[in-house]
Length: 333
Image (cartoon, rainbow, N blue to C red; front, side, top):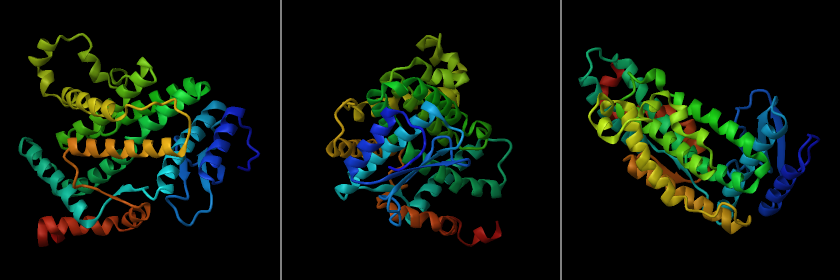
């Protein structure tokens, strides 16, 4: 690593350890437009790169900057360990999987629309199908690795814990706010599953880190209504029919799935074998969550280049799927 940035000794050691472990080079870049969580451009995903680049917001300093670097370095270790065994794959999609996904979203949307007095305009309904599909693709490609990376950092870099908890609480609230303004539009099933995933993630992190402030009851105001309700009362009130109650039920089941798969020694010594096993844990957790949400045929495990190519063809895939569902009628919309 070559940089003139002021870095603490622990994060310098962490970067150097990552470079030695993977026999690679890491470059740090400040960018005003970088997302809050930073960006990782790695040689295992982008074949035209000869070094790994970690980008973080230009206004990040001190431990805030160090945490973003540590998070991206940890994710890089997982990717690199998997790639060195020839087994690094990501969830991608094809015309067939896009069709399977948006067809199911459409069928579920029709069930919801049948119960509404005010129907969603057809053009908005059609436009929502692929948006929801892409939203779940993005979430399921990120969700399993989030607790893995954060649990590892928490148990290996104690000096970052306060900063880490601050960021996780902030991110948790942002994730829970997603789709809130679209609750009346998005099919109930997908609104519930979206909230359930983040509910399970936050509860797992709160137990593992541990930090009560990460609990979803803090991040979701509606959840506070469950705090002092007896089970019998919960089962006999109107709350059992709300998306929030259903999110809690599905979220508890997802939490059980997470705890089963993430039974890991988070403080183990850093080796390629250890991080390779973390990758396998993430893949197995992803598959288990997809199976629980009945989305196994929505995506496909492929090499990173496959996903990069699919992203370039996304609009074409969407149009082909809509035509397959609606036939010539799609031209009228």
